[in-house]
Amino acid sequence: MTTKELRKFIESMMEDETIPREVLKWVEKMQSKKVRANNLPAGYKKKIIAGMTYLQENWFTSITTDHQFLLSYDTVNVVCPSPNEFKEHNTCYYKGRQERNTNRLDILNDHAALSLLAKKITQIRVLRSKFNVASKELDDMLEIGDGYSADRYEVRELTTMSE
Image (cartoon, rainbow, N blue to C red):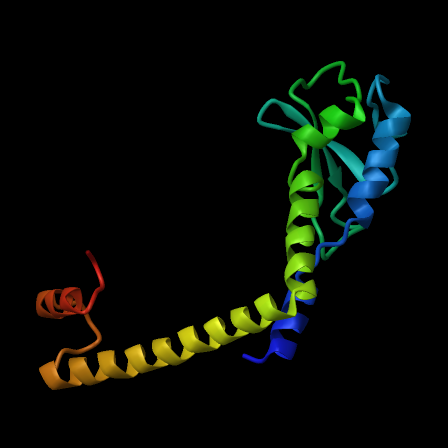
């Protein structure tokens, strides 16, 4: 894998923060107010799952994404939480997403680390390919088919790198 290919792959993994940011603005506006069907953000509905209340995108407004935010551990008289509490309930959309994006940017901005990572990925691909060829050759030598065989399992155990 080239550094350019790896850079493109990592850039494609960057997570968009637009929707979580928009929902957080709604939470800031609605803080401490009762959550009702008529005061939800456009394109969202209130959903109760396993005794908890979620803010969920309507499937017909978003085919490619499925955002579901935890609003409350209650199902009746649900009040919109504070922004901090909301972020704590939904770390995958806030703290987690920001940490993942920061880590990706750190790698993208460190050419030496990016280059080393690309070399290691290439090295693993080459070694895996060699391992697959050697495994097939071993199976052919022992005339062990693709199906289950106790002998095949025992011979395969000899090829593992267990300590």
